[in-house]
View 1 (tube, rainbow, N blue to C red):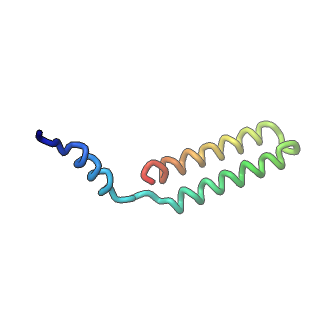
View 2: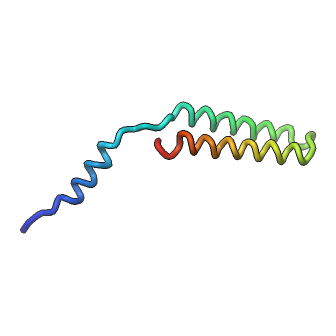
View 3: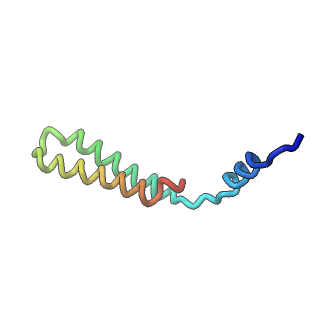
Length: 74
């Protein structure tokens, strides 16, 4: 009975893929976004609604940028 090597070849290709992400940049950007969100939660009652919405949108954009720059390649 002949044995096919397609599974072994696919596994070898995945294992040989080098890590090319930027994990430090990804972590730093996520920490900055988390600290900004914590700041919004603490200061939320004292700031105006448009400013709070703008800040939260900016933090969401920061998370999106972190994912685009470094996330998918980790």
